[in-house]
Amino acid sequence: MAKLDNYRTHIENLIKEYSHCKPSYGDIEVHKIFDKEHDHYQLVNIGWHDHKQIRGCVLHIDIKESKIWIQHDGTEDGIANDFVALGVPKEDIVLAYHIQYRRKHTGFAVS
Image (cartoon, rainbow, N blue to C red; front, side, top):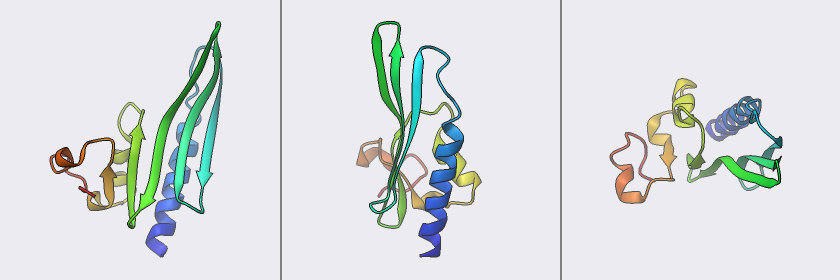
């Protein structure tokens, strides 16, 4: 359980850190979504630029099967590298945005 609590803390801290990167255009709000009961975590942008609504997921991370599953990563350098720098083993990080047969080539967990 301590491992999963550490993973939850890492996820929340990184999402909070990335939430400071607000788009430089439009009237955009950055939302941090933490569903701790089901281990779903997201960072979402929503707002308006000129006459167009802007909405999109920047990060979507789940904890499944005692691993960090990165469902979507809209960061420049890749949040998986941030987890590794925090001491999370690569075999506990799944790049779920890659189809399963390609995951074996990433250096991270397959599932």
